Amino acid sequence: LLIPALALFCSASSAEPTVVAAKKQDHAEYKDWLALSVSHRLDKKLVRIILGNEKAIAAARSGTTTPWPDGTILAKVGWKERVSPDWSEAVIPGEFASAEAMVKDSKKYPETGGWGFGHWEADKLVMNDKEKSAVCFACHLPMKAKDYVFTTPVLQ
Amino acid sequence: LLIPALALFCSASSAEPTVVAAKKQDHAEYKDWLALSVSHRLDKKLVRIILGNEKAIAAARSGTTTPWPDGTILAKVGWKERVSPDWSEAVIPGEFASAEAMVKDSKKYPETGGWGFGHWEADKLVMNDKEKSAVCFACHLPMKAKDYVFTTPVLQ
Image (cartoon, rainbow over all chains, first blue to last red; front, top):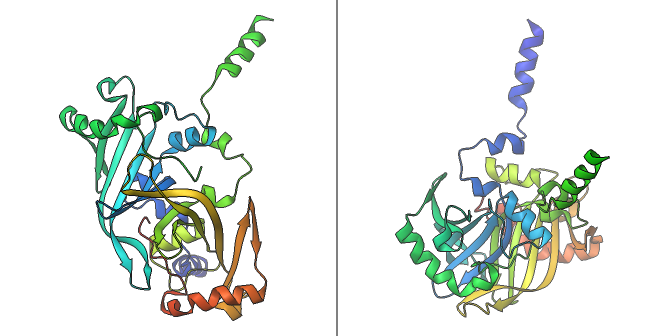
């Protein structure tokens, strides 16, 4: 009986978490994606991180982003800007604002440059309907030469 | 002879890169790490992404960051702030400034709160000598209650 008891003790005392275990948390997929860049929107008072799924990172690394390949998903995660309580000259993320998505599927979204627009509600990616996507697309239209994407990857 | 020739053709025409292949690039390790947060230093005119190695991400996800565990490496990657040429109210990364590291090893760096300070030169992490680390540590000293780290993870 000693060995199982010891095994249980060792298991229970292993306080060190692993990333594998941590990834099992029920969280939005973009939290497991690498970052491409950041932006601070002075007009909207938001700080943002722009992340990409594996397809996006591979495209950024190989410089094949005009156009981004089908299967690319870009996530734009924003927080209200906040003056750091620890350094008044630093603006850091405050309250979470939103996590939005651009999904590249040239067959599925031909009317909006091959991009579908959506957002995460907790851990679920919810795609906008065509009408709402058209509104998103209108703002991205001036970026046609960069496949409708404002972000230039800096961390690839 | 037809089959090998075809195989060669298929291989050569496979233009789609994979992340595995892309990761073989000779680049700084932090480029394969997940982001923890961002900051915009108004005084230094820098925008920054703060990333963590696997140990750091696991610690952030499990909320065990006071103290951060030995083996943690945090990367603070900075660029000069730049007004976006595509949206004048957005500040984005301009010229690369630096990539700095905090490495937690409580046995190795007891004089500086268990943290070693360093920076990446291209793909190599170069640790500072004790004298230079002491200067870094002096700025982090007010953050003692948060294990000398300014960053609060927001993407874990």
